[in-house]
Image (tube, rainbow, N blue to C red; front, side, top):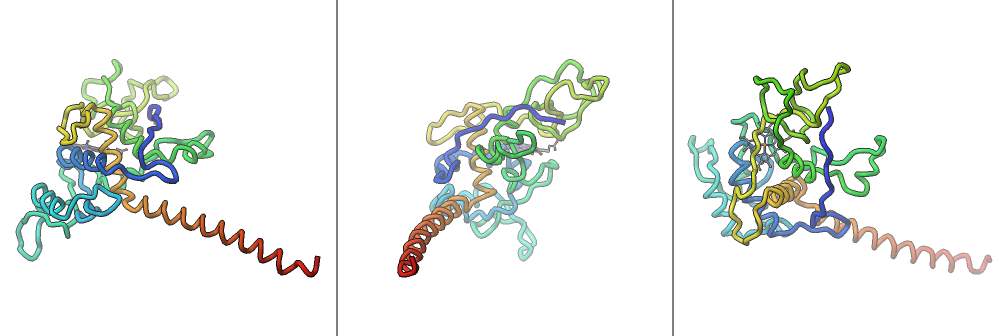
Length: 254
Ligand code: HEM
């Protein structure tokens, strides 16, 4: 099946010099914690990284308080639950059959083509965060062809869910974009209250949580871009020096 159209979004972290927006990551963490965490785990993300430079960058005390107030960890040694500490990871959560979100922003693509060439991705990026924003905004009234006993919620962007026969034409082509997803619409707007007064429309909340999930999937993106820039600079200088050396070595021959 095919999903609906996914818009490019100008995230702060796009481009060669892009960087995560600390305040946005903090807001996205809040959306994750207050809404998504009831179903989705982030089991490969260490809680202490919430204090790392380039990330949400909370103080040590804030990370400790966040861990303690929001998560309980089963401790084998205690044979009991205890409040989470910064040395723990975010917990896994499989209770609702929801996938872990640690790598989700890199596991999905927002852009394809044209003609399988991937040129859109070259210019706009892979589009994982854009996909997440579109998915969260993609819920719509199910079309009239939907049978009464259809399971899940109709989403114009989700491509891999169930699809009723009654919504296909004779050739088996889907009459509507998207498919039916096992996740009920999680965000409607005004689902959280931001301490920084940032707007809480559905679109803003979705962008914030998508940015946070991009950071979760790629926490070292800024260090990587920096290293890439340093390497290009270094190689450029080296090229100039080699050119001049070459000129000088061959001068007597020419
Ligand atoms: C799937 C994000 C809240 C249950 C997903 C997927 C994403 C996502 C990106 C994967 C879609 C795909 O495979 O392409 C989020 C975010 C949330 C949120 C950002 C908070 C804003 C919730 C909540 C629940 C839930 C609260 C449970 C009540 C599920 C389930 C799936 C899923 C069951 C699997 C859907 C399927 O494969 O049909 N979610 N989710 N999610 N989510 Fe959520």
